[in-house]
Amino acid sequence: NAGVTQTPKFRILKIGQSMTLQCTQDMNHNYMYWYRQDPGMGLKLIYYSVGAGITDKGEVPNGYNVSRSTTEDFPLRLELAAPSQTSVYFCASSHRDKNTEAFFGQGTRLTVV
Amino acid sequence: ILNVEQSPQSLHVQEGDSTNFTCSFPSSNFYALHWYRWETAKSPEALFVMTLNGDEKKKGRISATLNTKEGYSYLYIKGSQPEDSATYLCPKINNNDMRFGAGTRLTVKP
Image (cartoon, rainbow over all chains, first blue to last red; front, side):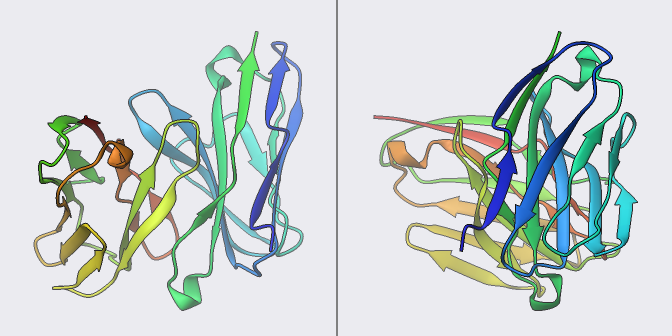
């Protein structure tokens, strides 16, 4: 099992560019989450999904979009990158029905200049 | 309390000291509480999954308790070691989502 895989690991974007952060898991988890790490603020929930075809906004969804067409994949899209979106992004997944812990990807460090 | 609150925000202890920190959370819509350990430049890793009022979990020198009625959980570390230095997170699992507080940053000095 690879667990939760995020790509890319690092990226520099120019203001106004768009990109997709990829997240895939091979544990057949139904729940998936996207977080951003802000200094001194811990992890803020951007979007989450309880299963294929279902997504919901978290605490800080503005400027982001997600989709969940398969159980395995949960990409996060930035349409018009802004400096405020400079952060480290973490994807996580869990099996809610079994009430187990969440597993995290290794993170994507994004800088918008 | 509207969101998860952790205290203290940071803690510095000497090697060998025992320590504890607090996680406070709104008791409504409670499904579970997790504890994670997050080392710098790594990803958070789970320590405990706690679901029932009165739960007590232990893993080596680390243990945790849960009170869902009053909305708090304690994490204890006995005989802290430098490798325990990390940020400790306690997200509350609601019906559908998982929300974090700012965490407690522990530094253990040799």
